[in-house]
Length: 409
Image 1 (cartoon, one colour):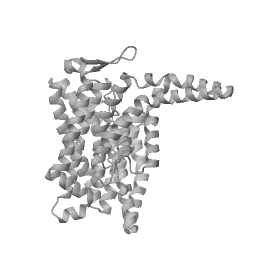
Image 2 (spheres, rainbow, N blue to C red):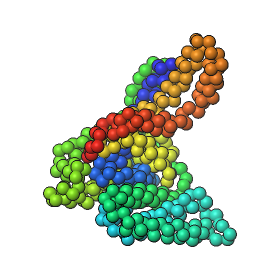
Image 3 (cartoon, rainbow, N blue to C red):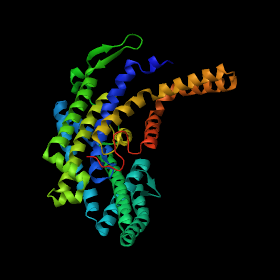
């Protein structure tokens, strides 16, 4: 394997397309974190819901794909506001009782979600498994409520309060994520679906350009052009919104200091809700374009993989920085596309070097390793993405575009 083969046009096109999609998703993570310093782990499920809304609109109403995407954006904006209102706003208002009840409720739903996913509708000792799980959940839920109430009473110091806030938000976000997955599976089943070819514009499947020379020639399809242009336009528009509008100034003020912004007349909760809505709309667009790119992959769990990868992109780029989300998405996309090939190439060069110095045992061992890895190296793209993220944050814990100890809108 040569570097020319690894960085051939098919891999470059795939890397740019994946990177653009990851950037669209990562922006949602980074915008929310930039203002409230919390990660919305339900963002991948917003991505999934937007895709389903567009799919159902196309299938049941014959709506054009562009109109279906607009509808999905509106639905996801409403869902983003609902997530903020039900999961995060109660935590910002800091009532121990509200914390305990909301987290316990979401934990209960999460336990039921796990039971439904893993055990389905089977029965345990003649009773529905959901009923058995609910009964068993009462014990840990009761302990959870008592622990939260006790923690709220004992940790009155600022440092302890911050730790409690972040723990509460983490549990709430995970519970919301599992809740949305379960609701989606109950509504739409776990079957994989895809946009019918007849519903997609003919332009999507048309070859626009052919680049490179055989055997590394590649066709750039219309759908890839659409993904690149959509990502570029949305990122420029979002940057303009944050930098040059009154709402953007309010967002940057809240990212800097929410208490001071409130004293200056900024409605902090409205700004946070708007941020959730904008990030959710971006996720809806990314979800539809992702489904168009990969084909029949629409399911209640479709948001997990791209959501986690996009989170890695946001962290790598500098979470809280919109430029960082774009850069992180592109870097992660490139890493996923060529990371396996670069790894095999490096191992082959190392084996050659060991042979050159006379260590035939080491050379033979590495050659066997390469032969074993080669057929399934693409399955490790997840590991390559996170491995790169870990390497970057070991050197720059604040990411590529973040600032040490700084907050970015």
